[in-house]
Length: 200
Image (cartoon, rainbow, N blue to C red; front, side, top):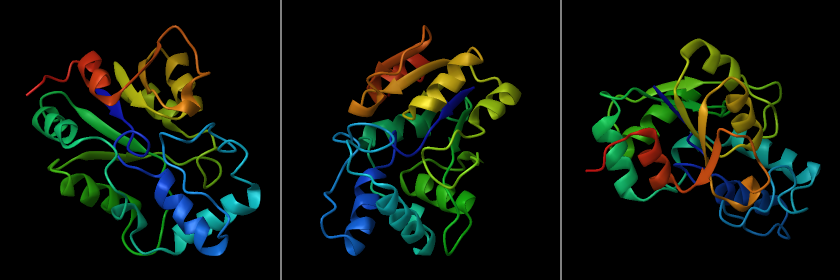
């Protein structure tokens, strides 16, 4: 079983989030996963005020999670779609509720729009409704016992590693300092190969 994160791995979160903040604060630059310098402050750009603006806007946007652009190339989605019933791939996310459909249904709809039929989705909630909160993904990993996880959140990667999961950590600037013996930084295509997802 493989745990696959969505935002920062398959979906581009940073850019749409930046754009929501920019509607209220025109000085906010547009940041992408590839240019985000660190997890918590985004290189000093993500103040607490800006983060609050962004998360309130996310919650007020109907079906926000269905609007995110793909981050991975189409070949990645085709590869996952072909393999995810033979090699159980669980899409584990800590997305927060918004107006409109439930987080679960928004995730399923987004993944199906990328060609992954009947995806297995688990929603892991943290102690706070933001991406800096330690999520319950580690606790879920203890129950499901995946042999591999693909993740971009430094804390979650460390949480997985602490319970013995091999982790492919996406090679973004904000993951550079995250180290553990079973954490391996790489791109999504290499991560799928390491996880044993066959090439098409």
